[in-house]
Length: 265
Image (tube, rainbow, N blue to C red; front, side, top):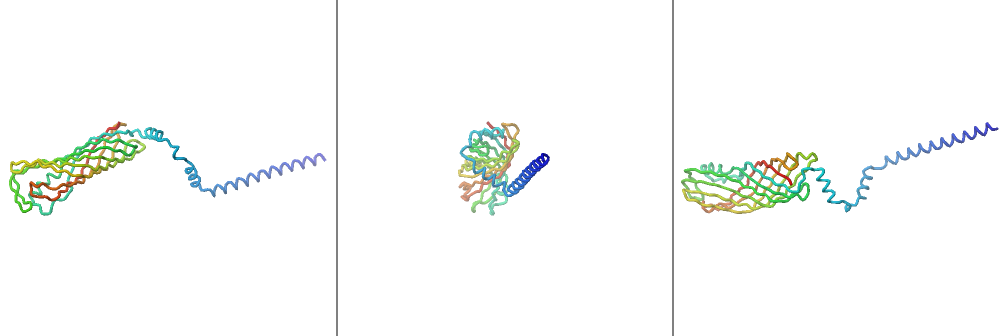
C-alpha cells in the first residue's frame, strides 16, 4: 500500500510539472505572436511624443555642439582675393575698336574682407566688402556713340567697391575638416573711373544697390583657421556717364573665383 501511495504522489508531481512546462511554452508562443503584431516604429513614435520639448536646455545643447564640433567659434574673420570678370554682354552696335578696348576693362583682380558672428553653429550674420579694379589705355582710338564720333587718346582706371550685410549658411561635418558654405549679401556699390580723353581728365562716380552670392568649400587647417575656395556672383548696374553722351544702363554683373583665408575666435 505504501508503494502505491508513493507511485501516486510521484505521478501527480510529474503531471503538475508537465502542465507548468506546457503553460510556459504556450506563454512564449503567445508573447512571440504579440511581438510580431507590434510595429516597432509605432512604439518609437509614442516615446518621442512623450518627450517634453521644453525640458531641453539650450545652453547644454550649445556645450555639446562645441564639444562635438571643434571648429565652431562664434566669430569668423576672412580675407580673400582672386580674379573677377564682368559677364554682361556688350551692346550690339559697338564698334570693333571700342569692343577690343573695353575687353581689357572686363577682367581684373578682386580683393575682399568679411566679418561674421555665428548665432548658431551653421548660421552667421555680418558684413562683407569687396573691390574690383581694371584699367586700360591707348594712344589712339576712334569710335561712335549716339552718332557722335570720338578720336584720340583714352585711358580708363576703374574701381568698383561693394559692401553690405551678409548672411552665411554652412554645413558642419563631424570630422571637423571640410565644410560647404553659401553667403548672401544685399548691399551698396560705388563705381569710380578716372577717365582721360585727349589729356582731359573726368572723375566719374556712380552709385547703386546690388546683390552678391557665393558658394564655396573650406578646409580646416587648424581649430582656428581654414583655407577656402569659392565661386562668387555679383549683380549690379549703373547708368553710363554723360561725358560720353550715352545715358543707357550698363550692366556690371560679375563672376569671380576667390581663394580665402579665415580665422575663428
